[in-house]
Image (cartoon, rainbow, N blue to C red; front, side, top):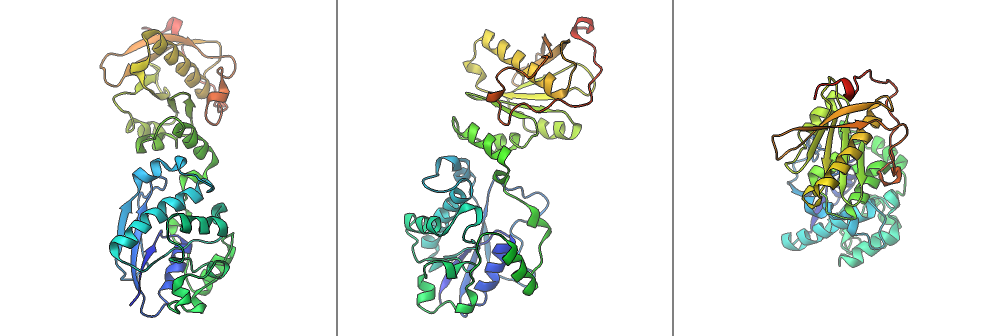
Length: 350
């Protein structure tokens, strides 16, 4: 009896491919769900299966693999092509360890910019040629050995390509509806998030904590390694509170509804003068983003998380955008339309 490792994601394409695989007589399926830090799994089981399915399922985290994803291009489009390399690379190891015969995926030719040439390159590079069957697009690809040996019936091989329209139409015919989790998307599909990730990854391997910082609306990256988040609303401030590390600097104003700022870099490499200049630069940026009246001077409090002592300094809100906006990932956001009525530092108690 042939055995196959099915790479299950819970997406519509994955569920359709699983249905096709279940049409193959005598095929023993083993499902694996790879967890990625670029997908949020809050409030749902990302590997949920159809209620009638009793197939064995294992989950594995690929956190370390994905944190280095930007350095693994090699002729593959980013991010989808590189992501598939990570998935198939780990699947190839499982194939040998579990002694299964081949791998099944829900990949569709052309989706995410990954065409037939890129898929062939992946299979060849990972020594999987002929051992990866993609039933949703199999008729557009070279035949695999399960097909050549007659292990896979022709009616369970489709010719889908590119957009998801054809997939959704066939899913309706099969009575497979979208799940609530279908709207869940890879964070790297967002061009702003992707640009931030690539900028940070040029000089370091980001942590999962750093990936969470990239999700905030007002995230800035000032090379070589200064990361700044300005949280304005209570909800995002609560989320940011959980991400502070001992090496971070916290900035805020001694007023109600103050923005909360996280600043992260290798502070130990800064001289006292360089720290002071960096904190003033960050404070001006935060004042601008929060929509403080330009030209006024305000008291800003700062504290290194590893210390208990809080210090303060005065800084003026810039008349225009802070200098060097090109160094900021995504550019400088427009200030909030509602200007705040605040007391300048000259009349604020220290």
